[in-house]
Image (cartoon, rainbow, N blue to C red; front, side, top):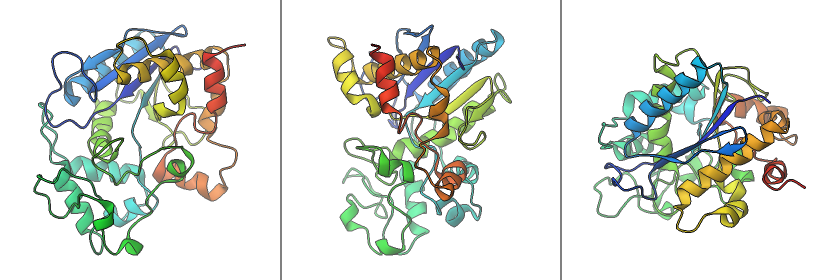
Length: 306
């Protein structure tokens, strides 16, 4: 077994605090220990979530328990974006750039659409960021992708992992059903705040940027996950009246924890065997990879042992 604790986080790009009463489309996380999930936790703001998660991880480190933390948004942009915006071919250079650009207040008020406009202005024509409420005054971010122009000069629409994960959305879509672009804009600076928290500083490793595509050795490992890899199992195991976000993280936490207890988690950190050497280099430096992608049968099997 690699980890003692497995935490899955469902992120949110809300611009106001979530309701006091737990609600969907908010921040949720669930920890699994000894192969069983604890009750999901709920946070109303991103700052609250990062503070509480840092405290939880510090307690795990103090107890000499290794922890895997999975966040449900992409950790990188398609190849070439970091170089275009920062002059460096490095996902972390882009994280630093976003951290300087993004303003995310303690009440969830944020400037993500201003930053999206800045990104769009760095490319010819209109784009590549798209998707906003029509009433929001950000004219350089179109409501629909079809409005983007000069798309032949824009970066790739999807990462290598996104092209292989069924149903995965593009990082450029900022709004509408299933979109993930806003979560990325607000999530990457939040991850930087988390790893820089003095309670866990120097105890974390971001997979695969700091570890390569291999089983990592750090007290806290933070990885990208995609809960919909287990969409069928989530439907089957969702409790009556359970909020979907809570069901997704609970089922995924159980799957990773049980697979780890069976001694079969390590291969997931190696990516997929079909990745070429060039693709592996891109994944490890710029785009990241979805933990479990290409190993769905193993995750399902952990939930449904023979």
